[in-house]
Amino acid sequence: MSTPQLATFKVPAIENEPMRTYAAGTVERKGLEAALAQMQQELPFEVPCIVNGLPIKTGKLAKQPIPSDHARHLCVYHEADEATVASAIDGALAAKAEWEAMPWNDRAAIFLRAAELVSGKYRYKLVAATMLGQGKNAWQAEIDAAAELSDFFRFGVKYVEELYAQQPPKNAAGSWNRVEYRALEGFVLAVSPFNFTAIGGNLPGVPAIVGNTVVWKPSPAATYSNYLIYQILAEAGVPAGVIQFVPGPPPEVVAQAISHPNFAALHFTGSTFIFKKLWKDIAANLDKYKGYPRIVGETGGKNFHVIHKSAEIRNAVLQTIRGGFEYQGQKCSALSRLYVSSSLWSSGFKDLLLSEVAKIKIGSPSDFGNFMGPVIGRPAYDKIIGFIQKAKDAGGEVLIGGTGDDSKGYFIQPTVILTKDPESVTMKEEIFGPVITVYVYDDAKYEQTLELIDNTSPYALTGSIFSADRKALLTATNKLRNAAGNVYYNEKCTGAVVGQQPFGGGRASGTNDKAGSISIFYRFVSARSIKENFVGLEDFQYPSNLI
Ligand SMILES: NC(=O)c1ccc[n+]([C@@H]2O[C@H](COP(=O)([O-])OP(=O)(O)OC[C@H]3O[C@@H](n4cnc5c(N)ncnc54)[C@H](O)[C@@H]3O)[C@@H](O)[C@H]2O)c1
Ligand SMILES: N[C@@H](CCC=O)C(=O)O
Image (cartoon, rainbow, N blue to C red; front, side):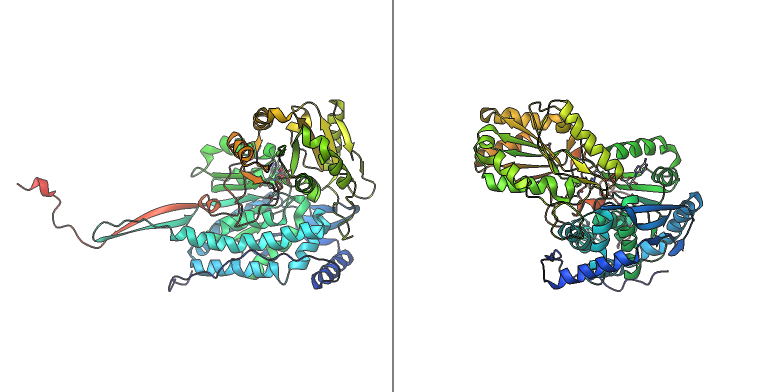
């Protein structure tokens, strides 16, 4: 069992992990190139499930292709079968008592150590795995796998320290009140998406930091980078059984976990469609559970930039390009619908947008000169090309891009579509690819356009307002109050940083529990109030009873 806690401690000061540039000639460029070369030489890697700290090789093999070179595979992984999932759940339940009783400072130290391993010893390996396996360029992979992942672990520790410090402000005479932030009863299921290595680490990490044990089903398309995270957490000291790594056929693994009586919570990030399905499945299982499972999900977006006539054109155009085309538009926060004032559109915005987009280089992330890489896989490629076709069929004009090349990797040109119909399909539905649809609005109809933005899509994740006019900013802020959980002024709608912009959206975009902030941790604890009395009663009667 655990050792007793001898004192309380203050965690070290936490800062965001500084980003490395990977500019030509730098030490980090050489380090990353070496890691990429080594990985290319050694692949494909074999990835087992890990249950109770032990590798399980089920022999049921699946592959993670390299999206920029789909004939090759980054890893071959063993899919969890029913028996493996069952022992992962049993093991997680068995590991719980010791883990939740471990003194907080020891749990904190494990995650601080994990952050150091991410930002130090394993930095280039994680970044290289994210570049090869998920198709990010060096800068995007650095943001994700090095900076954001270590930030999630470090700031997680800081937020949990703040959470635990929240104690009742009052005590009646002769007594002391405390609140104990217990882990949830049962196990947590973490189901993570392909597009952020950091989210892979954060979904099991958040519940585990506060004493839960977790069954983690990673995305098939991020298996190898996520397996590295598992190994880092184990090296940092997360005990066997606390996080169970179970890649496998998603519907089967998840269905088995959420039908278990001790299922305590779902920590999900992915598409809205799957999240809604899982919520309904959990609801259908409600009578099986011991309690009411917590459901935390961050999902899709249909994110907007609105460009007011007062906006500075160059900044708005360059932010638009980054917001829409970084990581091929495969961020939940990626810009997808662009509303531009007609006077600005015709006085330079359109020309600058098209001339800058034409400069974008696209190709393998291993070639550092490429701004864009591949989309994640065949289904994504076909879906995005299908959306471009639907937009054309609906009368949209492709101003630039619109084509792809899937002969070697899944490459789609950055695409800008002009529509006259603000309700057309690519203004409403999440595409998750490098496609921006533009609607040019009459300058005099700014307020109606804001209402249109608010009502066009079911999502409410991110949005940006570009304006040099404070009144126009304020009008948009008020009219779009519920249209985005993360809103930006004169800045692109992507790129939330842990500890700086708590991230998440409302409406169909999720439960808005704000990853990268203290509030997410509340979802994975169940508070117990404790009152201790130091003075005994002398009489059961009230003073008013005594005549
Ligand atoms: N709001 C956010 O913070 C945020 C962050 C990243 C990604 N996303 C969203 O994630 C999506 C892209 O990621 P993705 O393609 O990995 O999403 P996805 O919904 O396809 O997959 C997410 C996870 O669910 C699993 N899954 C898929 N089908 C399932 C099923 N039938 N039953 C159970 N589990 C299933 C997947 O294997 C994966 O682990 C986009 O919609 C994007 O907007 C949101
Ligand atoms: N942190 C990310 C959100 C993750 C979505 O995929 C951003 O704001 O760009």
